[in-house]
Length: 144
Image (cartoon, rainbow, N blue to C red; front, top):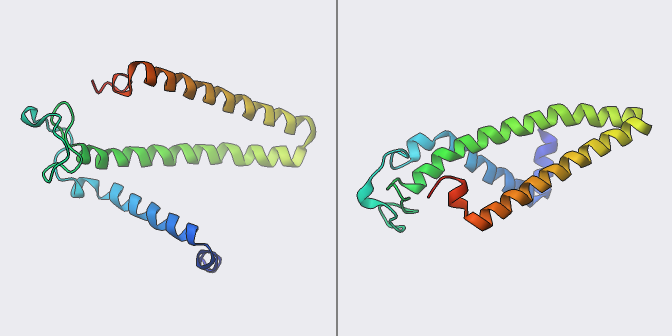
């Protein structure tokens, strides 16, 4: 803890990042309390309204408040991010230790495996981006 305090005094970026991350976590935890409207409640009379005092970010094509949906969605995003990071740590740390300790052909094999995975994920991102540009994000995410 002393090391973190000492490092945070010297590093403004760390302090700023920790503050922002804390705010995001607090918002995600208290999202049901903070959200002004039910994110699933449809109000056809107010569909596709622009941002206003009543709806800070506006409404979608079914009249649902976008701000409330963003707040509630932040919980799912944070939970899935934590799960992915945890799985990544559980897999990558033992692989890194193994590659560093054994070296040689094992190290080279692990590096190639990681490079293949990274290339495949990059290709998948490019395909998804191309789809999004061709048919629109709304169609992909079933928003239209």
